[in-house]
Length: 275
Image 1 (tube, rainbow, N blue to C red):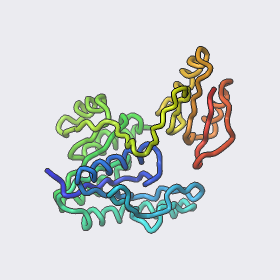
Image 2: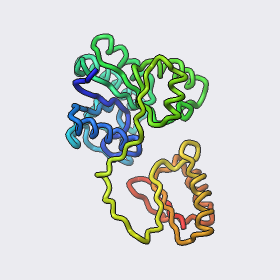
Image 3: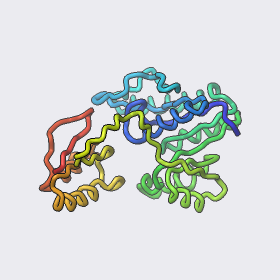
Image 4: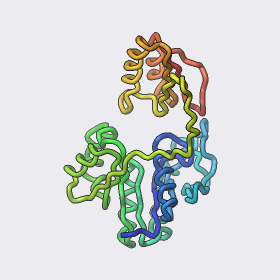
């Protein structure tokens, strides 16, 4: 199948965000660069009123379009209104997939919510699109309890026609767990145009950008390893940029004797300087 159009359906903030955002944008840019029409659809509001990175509900980037299924991407401050908005987003996603998507299309799903893919699966009964799951992390990362395990292992991953998987260990896992569903190796993508690659000959700076947490990304292991490095090479510096999941986690990082906080925020994220 050569799709007439590719839709990336997600609940990730667009166009500014973290690693997931950048991966989606690199996908979309790659498709359009190679002559495939692509559009990003965001079915949940992503912006907290206290820290807004994305103000626009739609826009164009590098030849592809993105749109939120709301008049604004900003979440309500009220719990009940947020739940209502999530329901509205689900209804609008179903409507969009039924009446707005081209029949000969591919839908790449980038989210951990099962209800949305069920809606896309229902809409698929009325047109010939294919559903692909993009996965860059092992399912165990999202499995917090038996109920989560049931939904992911027994329902969620069975709803797709194929998988786009970042790593070869993921290929092996999904091939064993779901042998009848094809997988494609889709390695990590980096849009080099986002960076000014100026190399400094004497640079001793290492930088980590991402979520500041231990369970998923192992930032504590990085810090402990770097403490060994600077014991031998004290001229090196490690900078961590990201948002800690809690103040306790951030305080644990700062407790290390070789950490010095800069007491400064960068785009609503904590910055830590290690030397």
